[in-house]
Length: 94
Image (cartoon, rainbow, N blue to C red; front, top):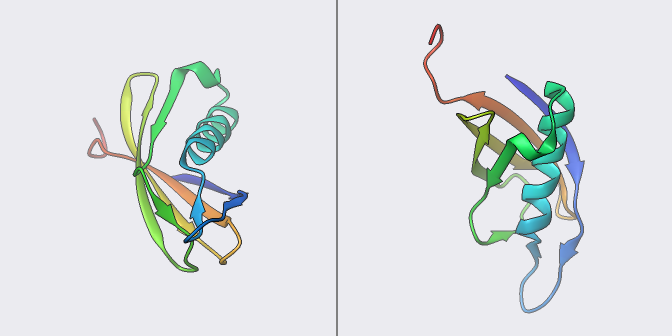
């Protein structure tokens, strides 16, 4: 498993939410850098709405060079700071 931290701007309005498109782009970029691959080979999809809440956990799906993985994103504060961990959906050894 690999992981890192990121910080995103919070979209304000009636309720505070994370900009999901930016979250997906940032995750794809960081995964590509850690893997040493082109960002075009990484696709990340997160839930349509991610509310800001410290300690909240969101599961995103990722396809990296054709292999499916899960990205677990944990909000570390109420201001857009997050930590993420990437784990393969495939059982070990496959």
